[in-house]
Length: 325
Image 1 (cartoon, rainbow, N blue to C red):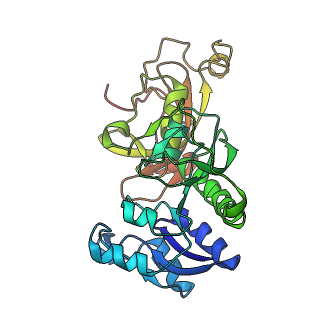
Image 2 (cartoon, rainbow, N blue to C red):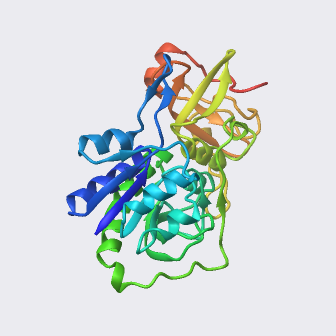
C-alpha cells in the first residue's frame, strides 16, 4: 500500500513510526515548512520533518496546497491512501480525491464531539471524563467525515493537555495501522447528527485565571492549557504560569461542600478569604467556590518548578493574594 503521510507536530510522530515499522510504503511525508523559532528566530524544521529525515523518507513542505503545481505533484505520487495527523492545513478537494482509498485522519476526540483545532484542550477545559481517538474518512467538511474506528480514553484527574496528547498519539498510531490493515473489510459509519461540538482555537483571553470561578473550572482551565499556552495569574507585579493543580475543596458530585479539610487545617473559614487568597504555606488558593492547590508553576523565562521548589525562590505566605485585588 502506497501512503502519503501528512503531519507536523510531535503528536504525529508515533503514527509515522508505527506505519514504517508495520511495513507500509511511505512514498512522501508532507509537513509545514520551517518557521522562525527561539530567541534568535532561526528557521527550524517541524518535528515530523526531523523524524522523517531520520527515517530517510522523502519530505515535502509546501507553504500552500492550493496551487495547480502542488495538486499535480500530489496526484503524480499515485498513492493508495493519505494518512493525515495534525497536518495544520486544510486539504483541497483535489487532494481528498486523489488517493484511491481517500484520506484518513487521526483525530483526538470521539467524533462528533470536539471537531476542530483544539480537541484535547477543549475536552479537559470542559471537564469531560472521557475522550478518545477517531479514525475518520475525510470529506470536505471540518472533521465531519464517516468514522472507520474509534477508541474511548479516560481523562485522568491530573491529565494535562500535554500528557493526554502523548497518550492519545500512541493510541492513534496503533488504531490507524489497524484501520489500514482492515480498510477493505470495514465500512465507515456516518457521524451522529446530534452531539457535535466545535473545538475552537485557543485565544489569549481565556488563558488568564479568574479566581472568582469555581475550583473545578479553574483546575480544568489550568490542565487544559498546560503547558502551552499556559494559564497564568499575577503576584507582586509578576506574571506566573500555572501548569498543574488539583482541587482540594469545592463541591463534590452530590453538591455538598468539601471545605472541611481546609477548616481542619486551621485555614480561614468559608467566606472570610476572597478569591485568589493563599490559604496556607503550600499554595492552596481560594476560588469562587472551593479551592485548588498549585502543583507546578513557571516564572517568565524560567523553567517549570514544582510548588516546593518554586516557593524557595518566590516566598508566598498564607494571606497573600493572586490576581488583581
